[in-house]
Image (cartoon, rainbow, N blue to C red; front, side):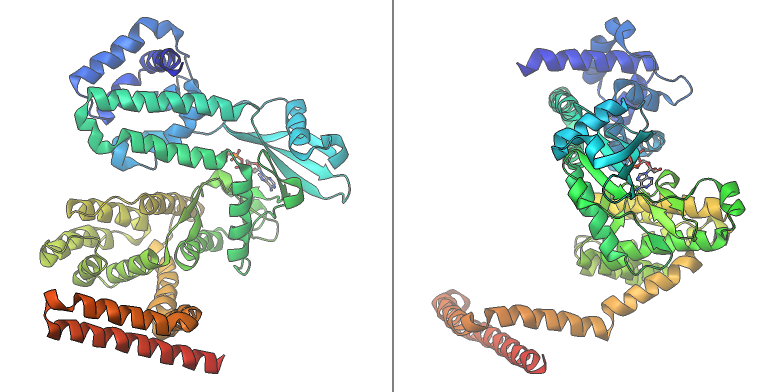
Length: 510
Ligand SMILES: Nc1ncnc2c1ncn2[C@@H]1O[C@H](COP(=O)(O)OP(=O)(O)OP(=O)(O)O)[C@@H](O)[C@H]1O
């Protein structure tokens, strides 16, 4: 039975939160009412001695989650991307959560490889070294493929991690239900949905085939990006619990001394890292959402290498176009236009005052543009923007928060390479290029072409569809009055005729 088991896990969690001093921080972050505070403290306090100590040098929330184990570390990381749920202060504390755990023995990693590949690891690999890195979900080994002699990185899931996560996630659901029960006000933050979001993220990371797929899609998108490279997925040696990638070596991105010693130009690197990220987000709508220094290296030829494709961000084409226009509006300081774009896209309810909204946007933009160029941050601009749009009734969107958060991280990486960097100057050409290619005449022609292709697919069915629509229209005519009904039909039929003509034109051309 789930109940007693989950209560026990909650007691253990409460005890660790008490012991590490994080209980107060967590309860404050969720604005917990007295009933919830009393329940949580009663649950944890008597068993305080049970909780793990953790590292006293870390902030309380970080220490508690690290002590509680892999699922909690991951949960903390996911929550750090949701300031809308935990508030800014806790989100910042959680951001420093390091996903590092002691490695598991190499013999166990080899056993996992054999279980996945159904061939002993020693037959596949002529060398299989001790782990080079170990995190909450997996660890990475350097190895050599016996058949080809090629050096690779083998990422292996922690043995038993799926079950461990399942148990903890069940306890999280149980806790979310209790929180909703004891604190009706907390329902606004949708605790059950937050856990469901977490479950989705983690379940994705527990299947390395998905990371392999992300890695190869990312590699295909960025194949032509100069100065950027990704390790190649070895599909034949990859599966659900094991992922094999080509070995890609370089100087750690956080080590300026080593970068200088290797003769790389840090100014060039700082500009490139920001421009690459923006290109991936705007051009492809598919970006690395965990681009901290630990996941980046500089190859001997100066290329930037990225690792770890467990968290990727997606932004659909429509949203990208809207945000490119918004950024462009900010660049030109045309706040009225930025406001209008929000209304046109339906992001802000139509009953709000566009001028008042434009003024609020000016209050966001002007202080940032007034700053010393080396302090301007697009990530901060987006974060202020979301605060304002939320006030004006726009719903929080997870993918945009992920974009904003990653932007802050990437700007941090760029600035640590070159503290004098002017982020706007570096970002401008990428945003302008995207605007030209996505909103200009070429984009309109491309969109029309795509529409025509869809129409072409419907080609043989068009006469039937037109007839059915006309019959439907004539059936609906009485309540609207004959004139309006007929006018709609005329528009509809004209649309279809234009569609057919465009289709014929496209077919004739191609
Ligand atoms: N293909 C590779 N070639 C060389 N080194 C690699 C490769 N893949 C991973 N590594 C090394 O292993 C480290 C951890 O890899 P990765 O980030 O993918 O694992 P992880 O388990 O998700 O770890 P974390 O969560 O700490 O980032 C990388 O920072 C890099 O140093």
